[in-house]
Amino acid sequence: MEVEKLSEIVITDTFAMLPAAAVSALCFANPHAQYFAVGKVNQDQVEDYAARKNLTKAETEKAISELLAYDP
Image 1 (cartoon, helix red, strand yellow):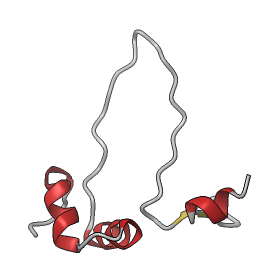
Image 2 (tube, one colour; image 1 turned 180 degrees about the vertical axis):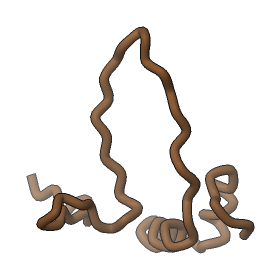
Image 3 (cartoon, rainbow, N blue to C red; image 1 turned 45 degrees about the vertical axis):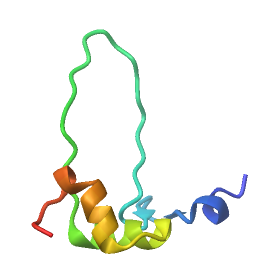
Image 4 (cartoon, rainbow, N blue to C red; image 1 turned 90 degrees about the vertical axis):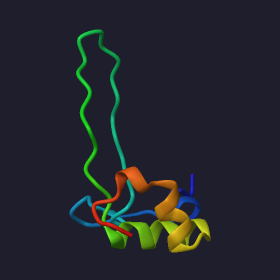
């Protein structure tokens, strides 16, 4: 499937995903499910995401401002 080549995400020997901004989840539907907030996004994650999406850091910060763990 060439997943690593297409996604540019690598699984390490300890099963961590690189880059650190990569996200993976197993989602199961259940009528009794409870939702939770995802943690805030750090500056290194913003920079990595912006670079991968060919955006400026400022554009990225504006787009996800409510998720930032810092003041831009």
